[in-house]
Image 1 (tube, rainbow, N blue to C red):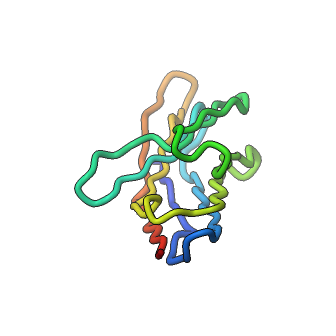
Image 2 (image 1 turned 90 degrees about the horizontal axis):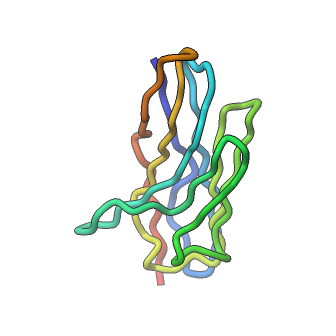
Length: 120
């Protein structure tokens, strides 16, 4: 069984920074792409940033230049460094990962979410 656990959310003033972490644990053979999503109240969940197993990244236009996604492959951990935060970044942030538990068996996993609140 695979688990993703996020941490690092909280309350911050506009212009501030936060760093989110997502740790994968359990029966892990390999991790393919990982991503951060967010969902604000009354809105659909949206992709924030993604990173492949090779380290290629892509970002939502709304966070380009402010957020940075990274991975520690040895620790099976993904990060999201969020700078210059805006009130519109307020949301629950979810970690997502395409994880294989064996060479032929894999799945798409979600964390439980961590709240980020940016005050104006």
